Image 1 (cartoon, rainbow, N blue to C red):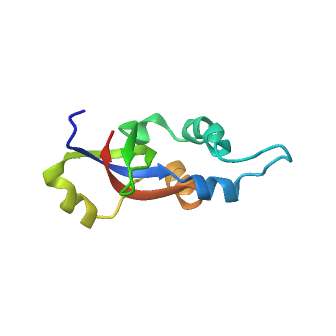
Image 2 (spheres, rainbow, N blue to C red; image 1 turned 30 degrees about the vertical axis):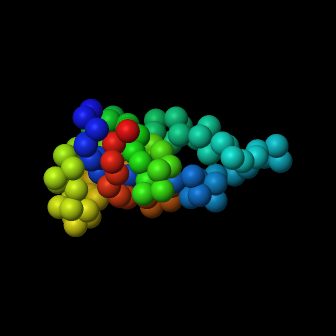
Length: 107
């Protein structure tokens, strides 16, 4: 993807994953949540999203994104104004507990 590509969808939210998934005594941070990315993504039908991508947060942190829409930098303001939407029930359910909607500059 070109550098000015914008992606819209749901990021895998480490804080939400940490708070929702049962942990064992030896489960520690900082990377424990990443172990759950595959199982979470595998619960979402492949037809529910365009791709799994990576985006930049405003602070430069890289996040994993379930991409529902791709646009150019010139589309960013329009994409931010419209709510992230999916008709897929599995993605909607997972999003409630473990994902955060948004728009990111693609990695």
